[in-house]
Length: 217
Length: 246
Image 1: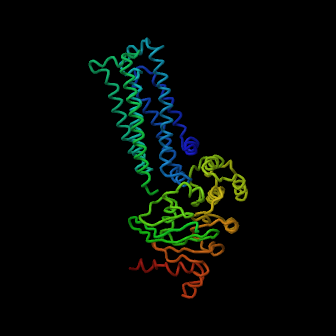
Image 2: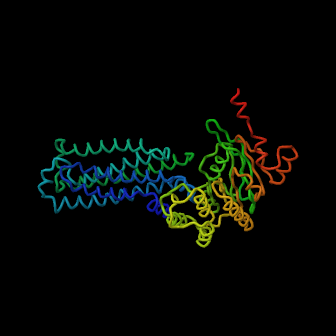
Image 3: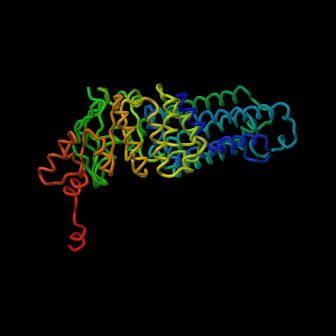
C-alpha cells in the first residue's frame, strides 16, 4: 500500500489537488456559502482522477505486482488524505473564527452559514457524498468520470442548500452563532458526521473493490 | 514444472469467442504466440495477467493459481505490451523510481545496463521518445526485476532491424539464464530466429501449440508453406476480391 500511495502522489496526483486545498481558506469568507470550500477540495481530487485516466494509470497499475483491489484502496486512501488535509485546514480556520474573530462585525451580521462545528459536519457529509457518488460511480467502469461527478455535484448542492438553510428554521438560529452556541450538541453532530464519513467511505470502498474486480480492462 | 499452464481458456465478447485455449510454457524456453489481427492473442495475454476475466479455464504460473496468488505471480513475471503509453509526460527517472518500489527483486544494475544497451536517457519523458524507443523503455522496465517469465505483446513492433536483431540476441541470452519468454508478434521471421515453441491461434481457437521445428516440418509436408508467414497466409487468407464481388 505504501508503494501504491507513493505512486498516487508522485504520478497520479494533479497539482490542482493541492492548489484546490487553498479553497479551505474560504472558511474565512463572510457573506459566502463557505461549504463550497468542501466542494472545491473534492473538485481538486477529481482532477487527479482525470489526470490519471488520461495517463492510462489503471492499466499501468494493475500490471504491477498488486492485487486489483489494492488499486481501489489506494485511490480511496489518496482521496481521504486530501480530504483530511482540507478538513484540518477548515477546522483550524473555524477555530479562529469561533474564538479570536467571533466578535468581528462581518461574522456577527453574516446572513449565510458561519464557521461552526455544524459547518465542519456538513463539510464531512460533502466529502462522504464524493466518496460514495464519485468514487463509487467511477469504479463501475474505471474510466467514466462525468456522470459520477454530476451525481456528486447534485448531492453536494443539496447539502450546501440544507446547511445554509438550517439556521433560518425557527428554533435553530443558534446554529449560526459566530461563537458556537450549544457546543455539546454541535460537537455531537460533528462526531456523528465523522462516523458517517468513515462508515460510508469504508462501505463505498468495499463495493468499489467488488465492482472493479469484475471489470475487463 | 512448467512456468505457465493454460487449460481450456474461454472468453466471450459480442462478436468474438475465445474457445478452450490450452498451452504451456517450459522454463528456459521461448514460445511464439501468433495469429492474425483479432484472433484472440491480446485477450489471451490479458486473461493471463488478470486484466480480463475468462469465462472458464485455468491459469497457473509456477504451479500457482493466478486468482489466488496474483501479487506473488506478478513479482515473478515481466510484462511489456508494446510502447510505454502511460505517464508519457513524466521523466523516465520518476517512472522507474515508482516502478522499482513495487518489485522485491528490482536490480538497479540490470536496469542501468538495459538503459545503456537501448541508449535511453532517463532525463527524457516517454513523450519525447519515438515509438521504437518507447518499446525499448517498456522492455527495460520489464527486464529489470529478474522475472522468471516474460510476457511480451508485440515487443519488436516499431523497432528498426538492428534493434530487433539486438533484442532477439537479448532473448536468446535470457533463455540461456533460464528465463522463459512468451511473446506475441506479427513479425513471424523474428520467431523463426529464436522461438523453441509456437502457439497459433485463429478465430479464437488454438490451431497448434508445439515445438516450432515440428510445426514447420508438418506444415511443409502438408504443403501449407515452409515459413510461418506462408503458413499463416495459407490458413487464413480470404480473398477480399471475392468478398467485394459477392
